[in-house]
Image 1 (cartoon, rainbow, N blue to C red):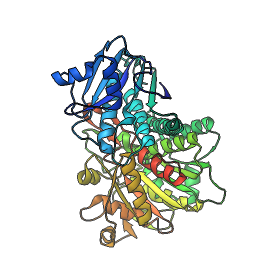
Image 2 (cartoon, helix red, strand yellow):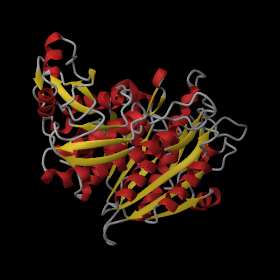
Image 3 (cartoon, rainbow, N blue to C red):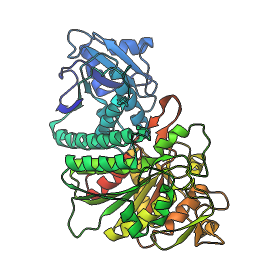
Image 4 (tube, rainbow, N blue to C red):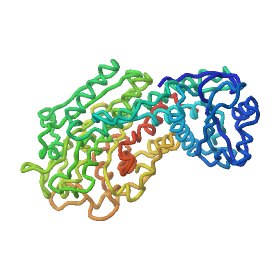
Length: 501
């Protein structure tokens, strides 16, 4: 689908469909008011009779609004009762409009939703959200379906309308940023949705090489098992022992900033299928453990978006990739392994494997002399217990970094929530036989997992995002979400001075 930006009023711009907002009880947006006049008061009459829903996110299609109208359809979106929308409300109605317009039969549409008042948000932010909603409404994962593929939507072009020519450049820049983030989210979703037999550690390595072919600004290096053995990555390799798929450590570098500028490093958990190892998971919903590499998928999505936007920053993406399966050679509960850092770990539970592969990767990234390091991982079910599916868990050793990520999440409507990282939790990792155990001996599983990672990140500024609750959905809508690509990209855009207002 093509995206364009035009300036003009709703009663002059021609198209197959116009998307406008109305609020309860009968408040028309400026665009809706103009179209109401040229249609002989049809919108206001239908509002009065109760035939147009004004509840937030409800949509109504008006066909043949009159010969004087410049469009053949009007999609009216309810804005609720509030004169000013919250950011969350705007995202909701933009998503509803994006879904509804796909079913109108229109090949093109003019969107006037950016004129709505949203608390603390400007044109650029609203434009980006409209683009993200439109792209999300069109995402389909059917690459393995031989029949019953979803029909391609008829909508080919979406035009974002602004009232003045002075707004054109800001809107166009916001569209470009929205499309790049959408491309990154689509890549993250697709990688997450692929089954374990079609998204192995080797497949992820090939995906990195494909990104390099698309974006010449990327440098890619893939470390194999021998290279990891030479580096002493005993924790990561202990997880891989039960799999016949060779592990990979995938390194992607983007250098868009000054040569002397320290990079941001993203580390993504890449367990392409997690059966739990010898500490076998229950069989129910085990198929969803293909999503255990959504942290890695987020890193790929962000590398894609940053390279597309050519952001003036230095960024490194590191993905430790492996499967975690039971086997005669698999690690056993009680085994002791030596990490790349030299610290020893008693593996009390082989299903607490994500922290084992991450700890070696977090030691490895010191070679890049990072400004900050952010790891992303579907790490603990405890995070879902604590926060549900609304927010990612956020912990770190540098409060300004944590604050910046919290702010980015609020801005992107892809929120995180900070949990404490107190030394009392770290004490739960004590082991009688090694430097530490890989699980705690009490509650607060999300925090003790982060405490474990914190033992390997003391030499730099670090934050950890536990995305177990937000990376995918179960049930009828089962599938990867692409989160937290928007959060991380907002953080990177803010660092680059390229954020939308």
